[in-house]
Amino acid sequence: RKNQYEESIFRAEDERFELDTTIETNFATIQMLQPIAAEINNLSEQEKRRYKLPQPLTAMHQKSIRRLYGAQGAPVIELLQKCPAAAAGSLLKRLQQKDEEWRALREAAERELREVEMNARRPAASPGPRAASCCRGRRTRVKRCSPGTSLSTEYLGYGLATCRGASLLMI
Image (cartoon, rainbow, N blue to C red):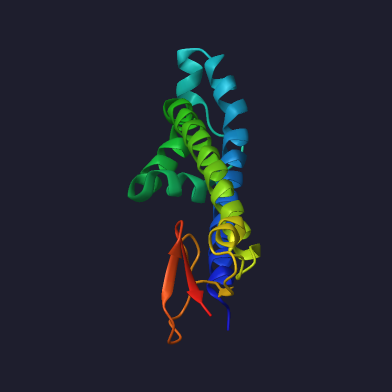
């Protein structure tokens, strides 16, 4: 059975993978649309109306557009295929905006994952320097109850002492 730290790391890595996949498919769609939008910008109005996509959208590109627009994804894809001049520019701007947003989200998630990994590697019974200095001469046993909470231990028939934010059991 996995402990709570392994569960946290597993969830964080799974979310990281999903976010990385989303960012990469979005970026591939941006790269596909950039040359098309640049080509459309150089065309005259008459040529823009007749312009068709040089190749059909792949499933990956369609998935990226559906993820971006939700229920309205199918009409956007249809508009892009029928009249690329009308949809390519605004779609490209929206994809680039989401790309920046998702990359910032990934950076924040990376910081959180590092914190979770640090908590998982931290020794479970480390009272720290404060406990040793304020409880001299007493034998103490400390156990961490959960990540991010103060140090505590179980009541074993003796009293619990609190030393500068750490709960210690006097033995």
